[in-house]
Amino acid sequence: MSERKPRADAARNREAVLAAADRLFASCERPEQVTMADIATAAGVGKATLFRGFTDRTGLIRALYETRLEPIRHAVMDGPPPLGPDTPAMERVPALLDAVLCFKLDHRHLSLALEGTGSDSPYSAEHYDWWHDTLHRVLEQLPGFKGADFAAHALLAAVRADLVDHLVDRGMSREHLRAELAAYTGRILGEFA
Image (tube, rainbow, N blue to C red; front, side, top):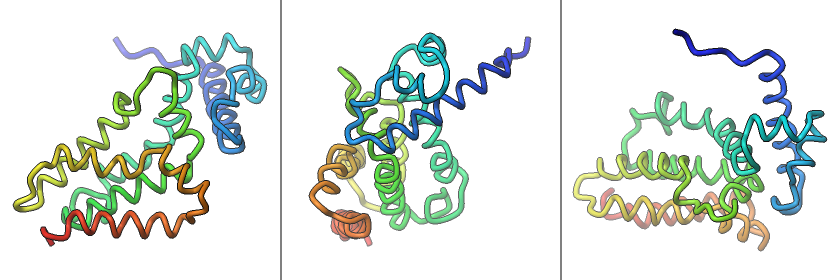
């Protein structure tokens, strides 16, 4: 039996909701200001449509985040250097971290919203596990590297949404953040070069 396709209007509504939520998170001062009612109004749908499609605000945020993250996941899994699997580990680790940082800069309020959804910990999110597992596997490819599991967690801590937001609010530019992260990663990996 084949999987049932969503109705055309349901698919259109889903896209309208995700686009509206994306716009609202991109333009808000703080992510907690964006409500389900705001998203429903901006998308031109009823609140019941949101709850049917996403269960709650956290579900909607996760769906939007995963949709925006998909192109990066594809590049990491199958893409060319520097993110793709054929890149040497010493080059791929900083490229992966840079990709996470740029994603969080480009989707700052969405990332903050996801990491701040009630009792959810950013460490229990599916995307965190995926990034950690990917980085862990790449670190293990470095000859003599010990403690890849902890190192992957520690390196990902440097790109937490709340830290990125704090540094941007303090006036750190995108270029400066990227350079600092690259230098930090280089120091961590330096002895294995």
